[in-house]
Amino acid sequence: MRIPTAGVGARMRALLGPDAAGARQGLVALLVSSAGDLLAGLTLGAITHTLETLPGLLVLVPAAIGMRGNIFGALGSRLGTSIHAGTFRLSRRRDTVVGQNVLASLALTLSISVALGVLAKVVAVGFGLADTISVGDFVVISVVGGALSSAIVLLITLGVAAGSVRFGWDMDTVAAPLVTAAGDVVTLPSLFLATYLVRLGGFTPSLAVVLTIVSAVVLVAAFRSGLPLVRRILQESLPVLLVAGTVDVVAGLTIEKRLDSFLAFPALLVLVPPFLEDSGALGGILSARLSSKLHLGVIDPVAVPQRPARRDTAMIFAFAVPVFVLVALSAHVASALIGLESPGAWRMVAVSLLGGLVATCFAVLIAYYGAIATYRLGLDPDNHGIPMVTSSMDLLGAFALILAIVVVGISP
Image (cartoon, rainbow, N blue to C red; front, side, top):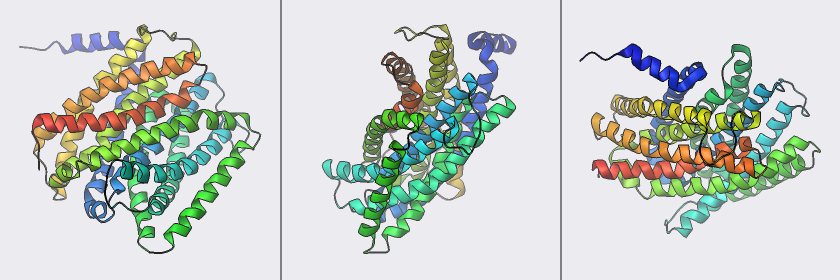
């Protein structure tokens, strides 16, 4: 039977309305993001020996990756709103909108990295994970790896914002997937490099103390800088990032406890970063678009989504199917090329697609109701939306992925 492709295209354009160009940009950004996430997955699949040598490290990995997306995804969301409002200007002055955003993001990076190191150890011990690395090791790996990766992701985020202004991209649509992919690609190698510091022996505790003091000094200095936007970002972001970090650490614990399954089929380990980050990126796109619409008065913060919000939601589900199929096939092929065991292409697709659709449902609910809840409370959804979505999706995405693995019947 002949499929009326023109009719399908017309229905899709009618569904998306005038934002079809934004939809194309978002899909391209997600595909680029998936390619970057695949590199991160291959890195994770290739360092299984390190994960075994440093027990508990996998608890930190989703949190460290997620925090790059949380901090710089929120930065991208704020810059997107600034672009829409006409206040975006690249400048070296620290009192500009961009300058204050950069200062706040750097202060958040250092302070939250210390907190993640401590949280990873506390959660690992609290949930009965035996013989993990020390809290000093966690802190050193988290802060050094976080600082190295954040410097690169910051430059990429500013580059995407400048490109959005110059080439007319929709920052709200392209920032979340591109920034989270950049975070994936650079964070895992950065963490891996940082692990060499903890293998040098006795000076790790002293280095952990120094890094903690430096992080505290930078945070206090940022609060006392007299810059109002810096203060607001820190005040609103610190609580939600701490909660997000805790959720991310629990997500890492969830994967750590299923480590045997992933070690039996390392291709599944390759799938983890792109799966989690694409789940978060889908929710991040929706969150950023809803935040701008709320700020600009396009939608109202009501319980039943209005038509523009429903169009954005439909676009997210339209993205999800090809993205999760591509992620699965790419992970399978890439794993085969470097000699990692896979459960098979069709089972990889089944796991990714089933888990991805479950995760997307969670992402849509959290993005929409999180945005309207923060807006009603008088808070900035740009500061809260993406951290709330991406951290929740790290945990719920990990749950959905493991649930799909069980349903498909993959076992070591």
